[in-house]
Length: 316
Image (cartoon, rainbow, N blue to C red; front, top):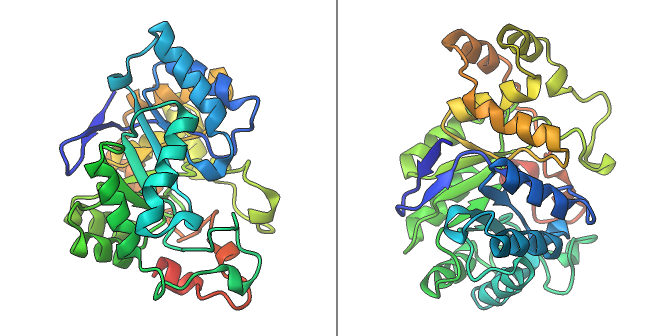
């Protein structure tokens, strides 16, 4: 499988399994099947509510000798209620306990949005903590502490705009290696990709297939369906591939990592095979023409009345 060398010398598999929206009771079997199929990159987060079950699957695979720990790339994330330098390592220790691991390969700051430590998700303006009171740089120092402690081998960010990504990099002792963001032909993020390359930061694409299975509260009326786009379907027919494989191959052709989610064994195999699909220059040009700056996960849930956050300051 194609791999990417990060700015700290670590090597990350380009194609992984996403676990957002993977339900408890199914996610463990999905992770076990993924590892058996050949996946070595698993993307997790405590807010997904399924890390303990993933940990059981990882532990079983390691004990059975299906895979060795140094062959796996496990990512998790710091949730918003654990911002602040002193909170980072305790949060990470809980993640490692749930995942039954001694270290993470990659630890990401999930969003640039601190919230009160006693809540999981804000419901009112007072649930937010301002960036003036809790600077991102202070939280990033805690991420660096995690590397120093040997609990995370690489650190990065998620859902960061180019400006905020650069702001972290400019003041960092250990610069971010990865920025995980929504990426697909409807949201190509060309400027962000260019900025990341200039900084030596690798982008990872989440929701690469359009996230049809995300919660209804995150959906809009009459939103486009990426997998049914005529250009995507035409290219897939030309190659004898599925639309999903074309979208994964598009992400890999741009040298971004990609983490499609599925719990179905046949889709695990299908998605992994997309790494062998070579798109032509014409294919890439046609897919590039689809960019409409459309976010399926637009972050509007952070912009409740009285919130210090707007879509403009979130995405730049």
